[in-house]
Image (cartoon, rainbow, N blue to C red; front, side, top):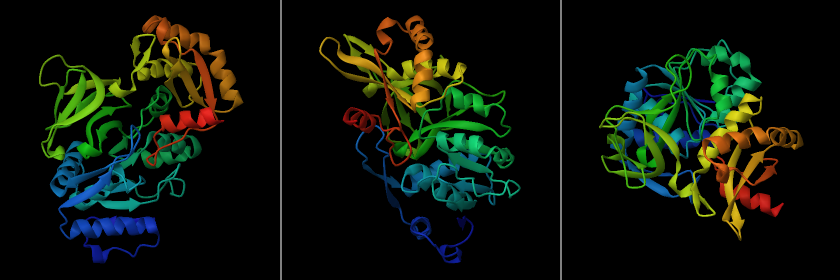
Length: 365
């Protein structure tokens, strides 16, 4: 555990004791020296990780927008338990240094609050990947006392399942799903997940301009992007009907569309229906829909589920229910034709499901 007080100079920080803490110190020193450009890497969840050069001005703009959105002030406290080699973790450091926050840094783990006293001083800002928060609530439910004193809890890096949303409803602190990427320097839109203000769509933050291309894929322009147009592969549906649009739902990725028998299918839509049905019967395994080569169809839809024999049995028992939901909502062509089970999914360094690596693993078993 390492403490970075964003109000102090680098030579006033405590000495780093681990390689991870040393990473934080090196970044902090570079930032406080006035370095104007930084190289970060994409997570690699949708392709090969690649380096992206970001300017100090972009990162400051993003940090200031986060502070404005969630009412953060000098001296507020925050927890960084995300990988600081990637934008989510790096931006927690930048927020501390830009906004004057007191930041506690712990190495990423499944349950980053496991070693904390529930009566410890609260954190005003917490950021997790969804699986981390799920693990905290399941393994250390007493930590709700600590969580519920936050001004905001941010979840990013992976989709939020229906089961997780249900799990979050009793929480008092506001929990938000975030939308963003390395190119936009972290989040540019948020979705409230719990409480009376919960929604099923994202709302762009102040000053973020949104549009779509001919594929209905989102485009973004903001101070955090250096006012350059960022083209995404995320297919969206507008919630507000008048321009300028600020509210949207993510339907899936254009590059994940599966062509099965000449019909183009968005797998994320199928996944949401299956997860909703499984949640209603008390199941919440990780899963995804993929296409595998097929001589007749070109690609055959398959459902890949993470879990042991008991999970397999339960998913198979519920198969008629989720198949019926897909047939009614989308059509019979969208029902997966086979079930594949894996004891554990492959993940990217930022904790996202690596679909390609998982499929390669499954076929090698």
